[in-house]
Length: 251
Image (cartoon, rainbow, N blue to C red; front, side, top):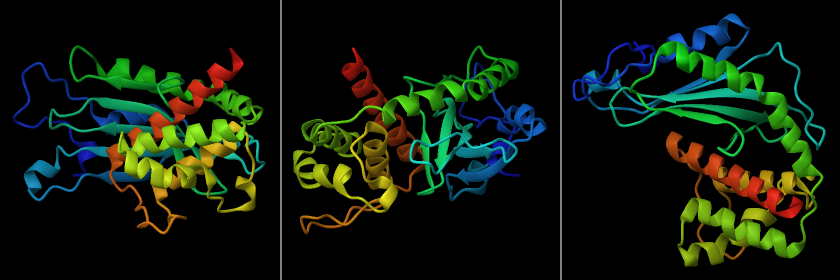
């Protein structure tokens, strides 16, 4: 049995802990044409503990038309569910986007659409309703992406965004921020990634932070992020950073 199919909680959890079975949460989406595209689990050395391990399930629906990417490549919606039954994490339901041009999966930030559910005082049906709500809200999120593509950033704004994006990954480590901030927004890997609009700058930054890059200053190369939790948090924080910049510029 894989951890996403488990219906039991780890023995260390309290009597108030509510098991929210991931497999059951997926059923409304599977019935509506979605399928499991990717399943990742945290590896445990102890086989008994593996049943309760943290896991991330990414779903796609091949029957849906791609939403237009301002760059013309198309983006597909994804539903991302993060869960575990060790009593150490909340369940998270996130809206995601897969961008064809760079195979990046971005997760929409809290300013737009995701849900965090504590394993207490909640039912399976409550969470399933949240899953459906997130799916129904994809068009609004796609509209936000279009708004970002219409916002042109000045060189100073791009530089500041690069520093703030570097903080998303490295915190207040000034040495790393000074070394890598320009690379975060400045490295262009393909023709579609040229441009100074917020959507393009966001995509360049996201790819550098998640996949890593070779520093232009001759510093040690930055490695990719492999942790499921870290990938998710960087994605969300970077989206929120871009959305805050958009709101500031439009107010």
